[in-house]
Image 1 (cartoon, rainbow, N blue to C red):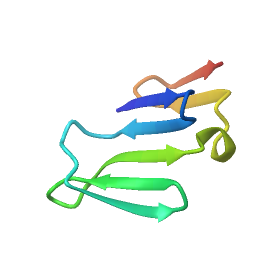
Image 2 (image 1 turned 30 degrees about the vertical axis):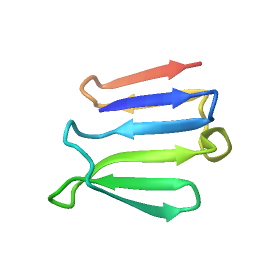
Image 3 (image 1 turned 90 degrees about the horizontal axis):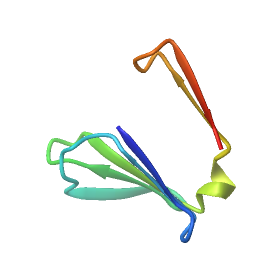
Length: 72
């Protein structure tokens, strides 16, 4: 999984899989889910990310370590 934040557009993309997206659906204003050919979610695109998410902290719990915190 990869998480990329683009400050120039205030957007975030969460890449959940190496598979290519063949379909996209907006599930909420500015939130788009990308699906592969089998219907699995492969990515999440979030516009205006700083208004929708707390970008100052990311907490990884048991992925794969017990707990890691990354602060901006």
